[in-house]
Structures are given as C-alpha cells and as structure tokens.
Image (tube, rainbow, N blue to C red; front, side):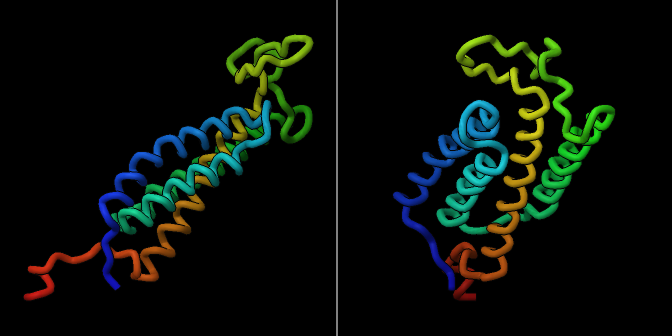
Length: 160
C-alpha cells in the first residue's frame, strides 16, 4: 500500500521533531537531578524518529549507522562501569573531583548543576545513546518490513 501524508502533517512533524529531540536530550543530561535519565530521554528522542517515519515514510538505509551508535553507547557504559573496579563496579569515581562532571555539590538545595553527577551523567549519556539507537532501529525495521510505509511512487513509474 503506497501512501503520502498531507503537507500539513509533514510540516507539523518537521516542526515538532526538534523540540521533542531537545526535550529528550534534556532528560538524558538532567537524569541525576530530576526524574528522567538515559532510558526515558532515549525513548523520547526515539519518539521523534517515529514521528518522522509516520510523516515521511521509512526511506533510506540507517541500519549500519544505528547499530554502530548502539554499540558505541553500550561499550561506553561498560567501560565507565569497569573504570570504577578499583573500588566497586559502577563506583562514582568522578564525583567531587573538581573536574568536568565532578564538581563539588553545593550544600543545601542543589541549584541543578549538570556537572555534579560524576559518572552518573556519563552513564546516562551512554544509556541514552543505546536506547535512541535501539528503539529507532526497531521502529525503522518494523516500518520497512511491513511495506506500508514506503513512499508513494510517481505516476510515471506506475504507468510504465
């Protein structure tokens, strides 16, 4: 079944994709401060992929790119977990060091500094990368396999 969405649907989808992706990245980066984190933010960013697939169809070849992004996120997560093995696995060895992602947590109410999370922030980024790639790949493969999301062929190709 060939289909083509209206201009209104594609325009609204194009306008909404960036704010949805930015909100998902916000959830990933602020996961140690607010409700959210790598999985939740990754699922939100992957929903922008679903919106693009619905509006424009499942065209292109993205399997290799998404698989490599998924592998990178998973490898980064495992390496961050193993670096703390001198103490315990998943030890937050960056917290309080004064470096990037290791700033001192101020006393009292935390004003929401991103760099106070230590390795938790980095692990959220790694999990977010993995979830974005995995869910986007699942959505893209399901749309490709079903055949219902193929772009409409032009009339000249059908007539020949």
